Length: 404
Ligand SMILES: Cc1cc2nc3c(=O)[nH]c(=O)nc-3n(C[C@H](O)[C@H](O)[C@H](O)COP(=O)(O)OP(=O)(O)OC[C@H]3O[C@@H](n4cnc5c(N)ncnc54)[C@H](O)[C@@H]3O)c2cc1C
Image (cartoon, rainbow, N blue to C red; front, side, top):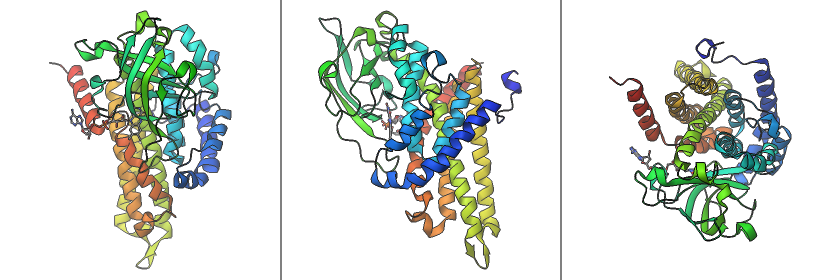
């Protein structure tokens, strides 16, 4: 069936089976335990172990490397389910997914064979790192640099910021400057595949020169760590330039921007998931809580709120699936991924806030799940490009497609 004829909402039998399996896992293992891990800001290790057993670290990795070989659409459906439970859990998988994508699309055979089988099982997890203390949106302003040294390796120096899974990952895809004189700057940027010791704050031996300061304390999105990475003379072999030295040197920016496009579909799916959960909580509470002699769900103002929430969730889901399906079909999806990310992340925040309002004073209490969602949702407005950056992407692509 051509993409245009595909009902965006419809799931294949395989997609139904896997999303139902993930939903059951979320209902039984994540939602009841999220409060504990969120409160303690503790890495949910037992949940992550079960995710490895379910194969969730290899969803998009080809079967020949031990993964499930599923498409972006199915991945987005899974991410929605995981995020419905707790967006920190999807955070454990998401940077890993971006790393796998970069390897699958640009990696050399040797790089794929070295890493993908262990990534598919979750034995090692991936992080990706663009941001620095002085920049996030303006990626071309990256200062961390790599210089070729006598033994043919590249020495990396500089500081990275906000690296999700920065401590526990075994491999980080890092964008750095290799030609400071390049004009435009993006042509002098390269992506290095930096291996490290998972869990080590100070790396030694072959990975010496890469240190991980204590995790950043955050408003929400707890449990999964966000850290700085300090590169101080870290040596990366030339063979670990993404795509190899000949093909990959100076191509890092383009590779990362490509990966951010699928990353945006991924964040959009997270927005749908958190909004869906907020809607469910709002629907339930509105039928339980009584004021003026009837359940608040019987007041039209509350019904209207629920109606708007449900409509936005549905629209966000459709935009997300459309972007994913276009990408899977090999069609252009840059504009659509930007729209999905913008709309679904804003929807996440708005629907969570509406549900919070429906909960009245109890929404402010840690006894109620919506309190956690209220702290978690704003992250989605920031990661993989803020809403302002999405609007810039959408505007630029619109003008390209409709040039007169
Ligand atoms: C919890 C968390 C996890 C993260 N994980 C990762 C990760 O794993 N890897 C990684 O590399 N990064 C990660 N990030 C960083 C994230 O990608 C950046 O925070 C984001 O890109 C925004 O960059 P910034 O914070 O530097 O904001 P800035 O770029 O400084 O922007 C500040 C404000 O100005 C606006 N703005 C900027 N430029 C323009 C413009 N041209 N026009 C209009 N408005 C503009 C922005 O929208 C924003 O509102 C993470 C961030 C958080 C909070």
